[in-house]
Structures are given as structure tokens and as C-alpha cells.
Image (cartoon, rainbow, N blue to C red; front, top):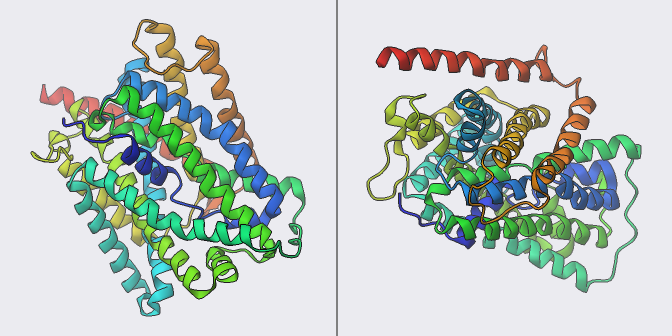
Length: 433
């Protein structure tokens, strides 16, 4: 495959795979207040994001193969666990990817109220998915380049917002959060975990990254710094303006823009929300579509999933299949089930940390251009922070429901389907041979 992704496009694509700007932080501010929200947004990445980013930097630079986290776990723990890693990631995507077309339509409706309505919203969401699929068929380089452009356009209004907040005299002190601090902090931490997860998504395109040994560490570091800054600085700007945190709801960034810069800045923030939906979906389609292609290479899916475009190397059928599945998911009306997302993603993340430690033990001589310090003990220690946060999140939200089912039970059922599908896939492969 052609290695066309360089540092800046990969960093921009990773930013959209994880964050896509401060949209989605409103609930943290509303529940915890400004000071606690800023503390959460600074501390959570140290415990949750930095360990994941370090792992991605080491494994992607030492094993720069298409399929990323799937190939790491398969190499370290065998094909069964590799398949489970891929399954957990793909099933989580069903709940995750329906969010971004909805976000796109939500912000577009600010400019064109006529788009509201179930049929029109579905049609617009499906059209956005089709656009992103076409974009992905042009290859990783095209998606990386568009991520750079989207990032500049999306973050520009927030840069102006932060600049205006610094220039103006501090407003009245914001009202404290209405809820008790411990429960508000825990809820805020769960939301922040959702907003800070997904660093391993950058790994699946490793076969298309130029000089991955150097590119991955630099791109991941740049994406971490950009993500933290794009979260913390706008929240600090809103706090300086004295906007009451108790009034924050989804879409309140538009009000913050209007308060600091008038209608023009508010409109730019709204346009950024629509770009956020497109940019995140586009970058995540780039990532997720490489997983079925890697499974097909190993015989777990029909060979057609591995077929690539002769000029762009894009896995054509895999991109189209993912786009069709996510379009169908729009009709299911999923709300953003943060706990289920975190549960399924957390299971795959822990498998990746196990793979990291196992490869350190079994393959000590593997070339590692970037190496997490501290030997095997270091790789174990950095996994403790994410594991602790996952445990807290699951205990705190153990009562969440999906219809009549407990969310944890539902997540467990989905995870348990992985071994069944693996066995069926092995039988089908044995019959072919």
C-alpha cells in the first residue's frame, strides 16, 4: 500500500477520531461548574488519554500494520482474542456513529429550520454518510487533508471566543454548580472519558502512514495537546465571561459565542458544530473501515472486504458496507448511551494494554522506535489509571437502562456474541479449505 499520511494530516484525523472540538462538554459544565469542569478536563487525560496515547505511539511505530489494534492483539494473544478486539470495536461503533449525523442535522437546523422532521432528518443524515463514504473512497490522504481543513474552520470561532474573553473584563462570578460535588464530579468524569476516548482509532491506518516510526509519536502528541487545549480554553473563556453554568445544555456554545462576539460569532460556532459532525464521521469511517479489511485478510470475513481501490488503496467494499450499516442504525433512534460506549470500548482498550505487556515479555528484541519507559512494569502501571476510571464509571452508572434491560447486561450480551461469531467463522473457513 502507498504510505501517504504524514504528521499533520494524521494528527488532524486523530483529533477528529477523539474530540472534534468542545461540542459535547456542556453537560460537564452544567453538572460540575466551571472550576470542577476545568479540573476534570485537565486530570482525566492524564489518567485516561495519556496512557492510551503512549500505548498507541509504541505499538503503531513498532508494528505499523493495517488493522492496528486488531493486529496487536492477534499477534500477542492469538486469533481468538484478536477477533474479540475487532468485534468489540465494531459493535461499539454502531452506538457511536449514529451520533455524528444527528449532530450535523442538529446544527444545520439552526440555519435551515425546515430540515426538522423525522424523514428529512434521516435523509440528511444518510446524505452526510454517503458524502463521507465518497470522501473515504478517495483514500487516507484525502481524509487526512480534509481533517486539517475542517480542524482550522471548526476551531477558528473558538480561538476568537477565547481571544475576546481575554480582552474583556472578567464578568460576574459564575454561579456554583447546583448538584453535590462528589456525584457531579463522577458524572462529569464519565462524560469526559467519552470525550477523551478513541486514541487507538488512529492505529488502524498504520499501513498507509509515511515513516510510521517517526510519524505516530509526533502525531499522537500533537493531537493530545490540541484536544486538551480545545476543551479547556473555551470553558475557561466562558467562565471569564460569567455565563451561568447552571443554564448550560447541548448547544450552549452558541449562546457563549453570542455573549462574547455577537450574532456573527454565534453563527460561526453553529457552522462549526455541523463541521464537527462531518469531520468526526469522516475520520472514524477511515479508521473503522480498515478493521473488516484486516479480518478479511485473515479469512474471518469474505475476501471482498479486503478488496482495495487500485489508485487510492481504500478498502472499497468495507467502506461501503460500514456506511450502509450505520445508515440503517439511524432508524433505530439510539440516544447517546455513554455507559455502553465506555463499557465496550473499555473492554477493547484493556485487551490492548494486555497485548502491549505481552509483546514486551515475548518479543523483547522487537524494534521499538518509541518505547514507554519503565520496562514491563511501566506498561502495567500506565494501564492502572484507565482500569480504575472504567471501574468507577461502571459502578457509578450500573443502573442505566436500555429499554427493559440493564445497560451492563446488554453490553455483556453483545460482548458474549464475539466468541460465538468466532466459532462460526472458523467453521465456515474450515469448510472452504
